[in-house]
Length: 172
Image (spheres, rainbow, N blue to C red):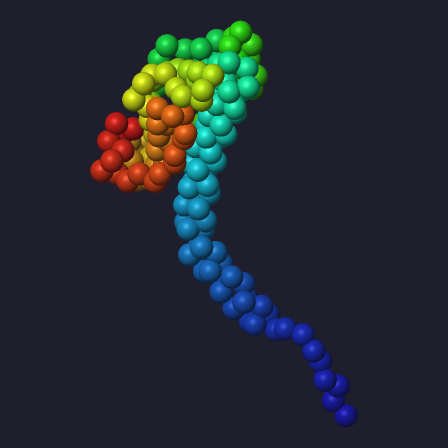
């Protein structure tokens, strides 16, 4: 009498491994795109969180500032320095919170290096501020494919919106 054997043959195992490799090769580029987008959104959301903190601190204590900072101690005068990080300071210039910069694959451009909240929650400069977070196709290509724009209106309320290549020209 023959004994039944259970298990996989070498051919069945190799076909299964081959199918798994093909599926991974198809899925990996999509996964990188998702990770890049999540990094971009997380960086923009970090700024929005800092803006909310600065506004609530200004209302609570009479004024606050959120500004670009290259050394995480002092405010910078260059609007492109938002890439290296930003800080929130109260009315006495005491640093409340320090935010790290964004990854090298993300470019940041802004209309002002400093946003000052007054005690009523409104901001200076009057007219609002925009900060664009943009992601290039790759490290050598400066053409922007996607981005997030943080717009802060005069009332001090931030709003995030997705931007496209055509609206993100100044990030390139």
